Image: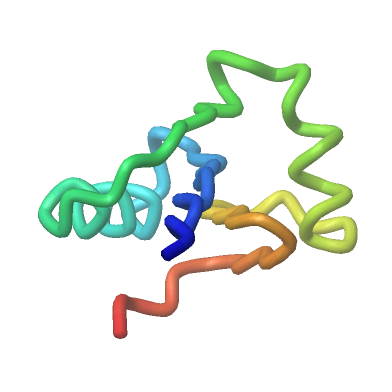
Length: 76
């Protein structure tokens, strides 16, 4: 039996973004492990954020493996 590798989740956030707060709260409530990158604390990450969104400065952006989710879409 092979063990499935858990995907590493990275979430780009901004402190003034209520959707970032909601996404973070859902991850925490559901026990999802993730790395949070607050773009105000890590402005060097803004270039990566803009590339992931196709030129937009929007948060949250969730990266899970090759899957990128721009904005908050709820869980489920």
